[in-house]
Image (cartoon, rainbow, N blue to C red; front, side, top):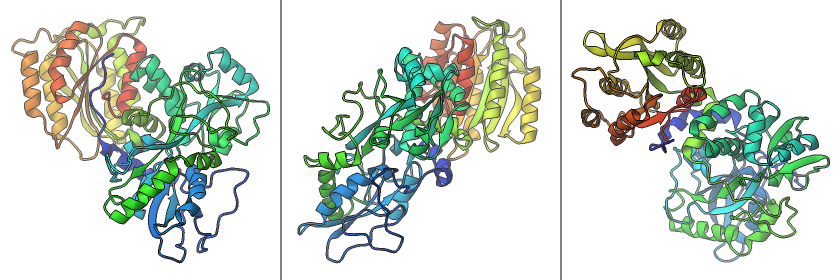
Amino acid sequence: MAKHRAVHAASRWLPGVAMAAVVAVVGMLMLRPDDQSPPQSGETPAPGVAAAPGVAVTAPTGSCAALRAVAATSFRPMLDSVAPKLLQGPDCMRLDTTYADGRAAAAAVVKDKAHVWIPDDSSWSSAAAEVKLAKDTAGAGTVLATSPLYMVSDAATGTRLRRAGGSWMALANLVDARTVRLVVRDPAGSGDGLIGTGAVAEAVWQAQDMDASALWLSRARGSTRTVAASSEVLRTKAGEVGLVPEYALAGASLSGRSALPGRDFAALLRYTWQPTATGIADPKSVAGLKRLQEALSGDDASEARATARLRDASGTATPNAGLLATNLAKALPVLGGHHVDHVFATWYAQDRRTDALIVVDVSGSMAKPAPGSATPLIGLVREGVRSLGGMLPNDARLGLWEFGVGLQGTSDHRELVREAMLTPAQRRALTIALNTMNARPTGTGLHDTILAAYTSARDRYRPGVPNQVMVFTDGRNEDDPGGASAGQLATRLQAAQDPKRPVQLSVVAFGDHQAAEVVGKAIEPIGGYVDFLTTPDQVAAVFIHVAAGGLHH
């Protein structure tokens, strides 16, 4: 399958930040046996001790410069370890730290005007459009520490997982077959949940493709148990596999249990140094950032990592740190924004908020059954549109066109349902239209219809909402006298493009691969994408992918 060519707009994350205030854990203490009770709000912690959840450190007396940080809760032991050293010397520095996890962390960075953000994975930056991060300076993007995720289960389930290959792909297959059940932390509330879930989906993506990954996530979501804390993930029942970071396992009793890091790749949490634009605006804070980063990543940082039960940036464990696996498989790359998007759109309805116009070919070839199926292509598309409508929230917009040649006067397309919010009336109108949409003896005015649909979506653009057109066709532009050529389509699309009103254009082709490539070249200049399908499952998957914000990557 062709590679994706575009990236989701950052604005798609804004609704999720508000939601995260409910679901994310802000400043929750990491559950460890040796944790001590934090100071109460209003008390002054000892010099160098990081703040309690949601409580900033009160400055000790003296002239030490202050540095405001927001960090993942599980990084607290490492900051606690280095903070006393920072208070020493003429260039002393005290940390005012707020601990916040998941999506809520970005809001805390903005609220606190933090100089630096240390999330529990690099991928969170793709979900933080409101945070102004420094780029290519002050060590931005440096990984300070890592923690691999393990597949934790009862012994019998662990044996089954090993026999299946002991890999993340093996886990994906067992979950898809409904023979094991996943247990994960809330993906919006922690890196544990996001990277754990994303790792299994990524195994499917690598083995098959993006649509298969989206379909797997949709199926897996229905049988996955989502919990709030790592301690709850550890309490798996028979037949369940919990995805748990190593820092939460070290020191925990694993008697009678199995913990596998994955033979195909290691899924790592990457604690990442993210200085902000505020942090690099003042020379004093720049000096403080430099000293803190050196303390967290220099030669003396191994002791602090061991205290936090974390590994170094490469995934290597400090000797005698009490960590589980000696050797790990090659690390999975950082999840890109679109991959993160898949997880959130699967878990949370609000992340499926999109404006979509579905345009369906009703020419005679659509009456033919899909390979390996007795169902006509038009029937698969009808069911796909129905499932899409069911996945989208009420404040999404969905419209439906059909097209052939001359379906309505001189127009090759006919609007069955005008694009509008998914009110009960709109949903009823879609159901009625789908029940009557059938293939017929007509040509395929594909090029003219693509241009008309693109222009319509552009004119109905809503700021901050993904705006999509998906054209489902047999791939050919035929029997359309006077219709636009592929070259004319490319020229007219470029003329219609408006950067202030972007449209994600996808053509889903099922049939003539060579003809689909012609269309792909015509729409490529505006970032359009052709998805060529060969199986009925791919038809279902592509509609799930649209609900996740589009086919582009």
